[in-house]
Length: 194
Image (cartoon, rainbow, N blue to C red; front, side, top):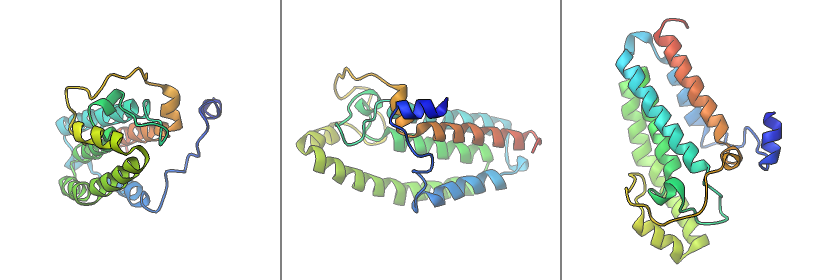
């Protein structure tokens, strides 16, 4: 079934997102899940962190359902309110997992990595790439739309609708399954079942 969905959507390789730059992220998540201890967790932080992570993943799914990479400047869906909904979603997922696990030191480290390396690097690379492709159209968009904190007023009206096929094509199903699995592992650790 999944192969049919993937081929209908243009197909993607499950491991195409595993790169030299993403391996440390995956390693950190696995370490967080492995080293999380029930003694460091509390019910309120487990629930709060899960809600934050789910909101982050929903933002990513919303964004991926509108994203058509390098074919057009996307200004629909969450892109009408913030330039980087996928980065904002990733931030919320990371924040949520650290809160769930009660690993406050890792929360501080992840905030520093995000603020000093991940986001600035992505902003520069993405900004140059989009400016090179779309020129003044992108500059106008970038001046009007905040990067990570959503604006309540949308940038522009767009007829583009959200598409599950784009979510699959943009490889978000794997991220969704990883978020669900991470929440489940932390819940099971909290309840003492693993």
